[in-house]
Image (cartoon, rainbow, N blue to C red; front, side, top):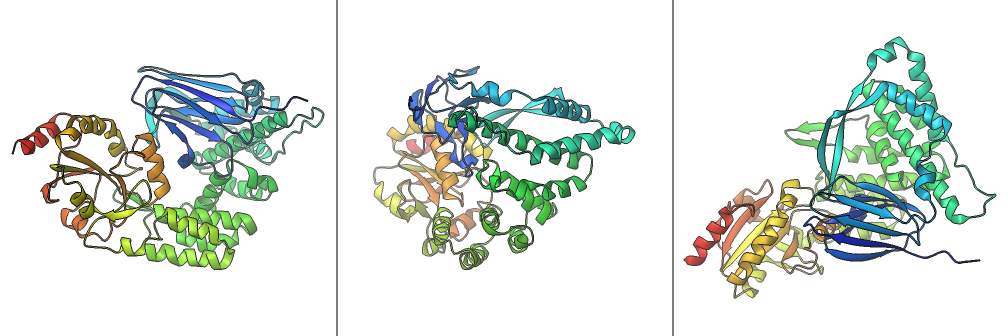
Length: 474
């Protein structure tokens, strides 16, 4: 018996400034933070896959493309200024197996298209995660059809619930683990598609009873759930739609979801491992919605007491900077974390950089699209001014260390000597004095660390060149 290959190879040829990102649907921990990102013009990446998987290739030049790959496959990615080309050898023919539609799925497709149709004339470009150009489509909703033929709608919902509860078809007669894995992946993708369609129908036609049917299905009750690559999405939906009933507070352009309430109510809906996993999501979302550290610490203590998982708590504290109490409470100086994980103050940094004439501070974050859009221009300005004694210092306002590191990777900052995570933005007096309550924000300091441009130009265009040159002349 010939052994299966133990890795897939990705070959990248990129003639643009856009990073190329590869999103793998390969595990229950799947989330955007775990994307593989390369900004090299020529690169070769080895992937050890747990099983055949879906790879979505992203760039900021062209729309994303999806291919299915297995160990032993070669995925070739070519990107130029106008086009993204992606090819996979696909030795197991996974693309065809997974995309092939059964008679039942074709019937469901036809019924769904009667109620929800894509309007290509309303298509527009959007950006996901700051790493991907995607095509957004306008849709038209046929509400009169529901009023005239409710039985068609009922049939569609019935079909989708059936797909949601379907069990994977086995291939025991083939005795091929790789083909079995492809079939399992196909099952998960089809089930996720059914879940998304039910959600859309419920929201567009104001039919909340569909949510009840989804929760009463085996989606949250089967052992297969824990292995699903869509588990996080399913649980996030349950938290927001069932536990919190879609409640969301808005203030200006900000929204707030009460994940503390969700954490407390969760035992009414789940138990065991699913309860624990859902509460992990709630804790992460508390940080995302800017709950105070005291509140987050309180719920983290509850979690440790109820679920006895000290490894998760330790990892959480490190990821979300809760292990840096002393530094976070510092008010006198900006406390920075380097790519290597060491911490020190901005004053220390300025004192050590004795040969520097000016410091250009760039306050940014992984979730800030304008910040990230400006990064390629910033790199150009670094190349222009660093030899003239200007230090570019990047200060991330992220509360999530993992998101900062992933975003840094996409912009080539993970090896740059002056890229830092800001530990104490909420307490630091300089932040308050300068009123840094929005980003991107750019500030210029002189050689002694004194603020000389509290609202410096961004790196786009030539205004920053003029500003820096005026100080260098003086």
